[in-house]
Every structure is written in structure tokens, then in C-alpha cells.
Figure: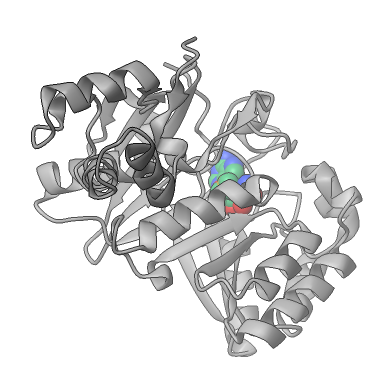
Length: 345
Ligand code: SAH
């Protein structure tokens, strides 16, 4: 790997300082920053309003560690999946999900995942490393370009529901969101961004203290410790009472309701006691529930519950005036649906 510095790790101030140190004008730094972050330049030669000498100077000191979309797959339902190659050769996946009302980018925050959720394909890849903020940002830019190209309009929403646990790479996730929402980046509203977590209580509280303005979704899947630990072993370390306490803190500080993601499986969490526990858990903090369709990842230990079981959940929640949505899967034919991202190709 090159010993030159990744120019994208520099702030605008640092770029301005670099040019001053080189006896040039600070303003040059703004021009380069714009090329990197608004025009998405992948090489110094593309920076056509800089002199040849300036471009050579940059070449001498820096590299641009951009991502490359290695492979793009399109599903029959319009979903697009990108296999994204990072500068060190590792690969992550990101997805574009078009619906009638929105076009959503689903991005990855880690290469692989350190959690061990039994129903998720990404869990089978061990965690290789965290993505840096630029690598996350680049996935969004790549998907935004594809959205314009194939759907004729920019992205409307972003969900951190790809590979990895975003709260275990908190600093980079926050930095990427700062760039996504800044006028010098994509200028998107934080209200259109959702970060999904299996629930790291300490970081949920930190997010509340940091006054983040995006939405929070929690992958709950069971409101009974014993059941949740079986399917999400991580729950042993961060049991439901700690999660509950963190979510109460979040709501107290942000007044923003939480989304619970929930899959109902045959024989695992489809009994009356499971429904009662969820209804109770939903009474702690204002929330809504997204019932996600299960995307089978192999052997059959997990099976989508019957429609009857789903209906029992829906009517129990609605009886308590809890908003519940049923989320149909998209992009299944290209392994792009929730829990299917596993660098198969
Ligand atoms: N680590 C984060 C984000 C990644 S997964 C989190 O846990 O929230 C995004 C969502 O897909 C989570 O709710 C996850 O529980 C769910 N999921 C994982 N595997 C799935 C599968 N096979 N079918 C349906 N949903 C799945």
C-alpha cells in the first residue's frame, strides 16, 4: 500500500494549510475540497481548474482512497445491490431500494459484523474492520448516482442497515452523517436518515447526549431475555432492562419515537407470551413496530411464522394503539434483502 496520505482524511482547513505551507493560496484548498466532496473526483487529473503543477504536487503527496463499485446487480423489483471494493481489497455491500414514495440507500458500516445474530447472513463473516467515514459516505454517493441514472431522481432516505453494527463504529458513522447532511456534502436532512442497532445501551445514551438528529431503529425480535439471547447472543451482555433504560433516556432527551424491527419466526417468538412481552415493552417509550418478513439464509432453523401468528401480533399491537407496519422484502432474488448481505458473489 502507498505511504502517501489519503487526502480525504484532511479537513478543509488542513487542505488550506497545506497550500499555504507550499507557498500557494489557501483558496486552492477550497477548490480541492470541492472536487473531492461535491464532484466526487477519483483522481487529481480530473481537477481541471488546477494547474498541471498543482496537480503534480498533489500527486506527489497524496492518494485518493475512493471506493469502487465492483459489481452491480439489479433485481426484477428495481432494487440494486452494489459490491463495493475498498482500497485494501475488502468488499462490502450496499443496496438501493426504490418504492412508490421513496428511494432508500441501505449502507454498510463494517466489513462483516462482530455480532452473532443467528438469523443473519452477515454474522457468518467475522468482523474484519470498521469502515471509515469516507467509505460510508462514498457508498451513499454511489447509490445516489445510480438512483439518478436508473430512477431519474436523487435518493430520498438512508438507512444504516447494511453489514455491521453501526453503534460499534460510532465515530465514523457520525462523521459520515455529518458529511451527508452538510451543505458541502449531499445536504440531506438528518430526518431522512435512520441508524439501526441491535442495541448498545451506552452508545444509545451517548447519541442522546450528542443530540443527534437522525432516527433510531432497534432490532428487537424478542422482548423476552431468554428468547432474545438465544437468537441474538449479544443480548447476554446487554440485556433488555439495560436497553430499556437507554431507550427511556433517549426519548427523554430527544422526544423522538423509536422504531422496533421485529421478525416473527415459527416456534421461536410466535406464542402469546411473546406478543404480551412485546406489547409491554412498547409501553415504555413511544414507538412503532416494523414487522419484517424473514429472508431465509439457509438450513431451516428459522422459518417465517404463519400469517395467523403475524395477524395476532398486529391486532394485539393495534389494540394498544401502537403503530405497526408490515415490511415486505425487496431484492430477494439478488440476495439484497435484510440479513442477506454476505458477499456471496
Ligand atoms: N446491526 C444492525 C443493522 C443491520 S441488520 C442491527 O442489528 O440493527 C438490519 C435489520 O435486518 C435488522 O433489524 C436485522 O435484525 C434484520 N435481519 C437480519 N437478518 C435478517 C433476515 N435473515 N431476515 C430478515 N431480517 C433480518
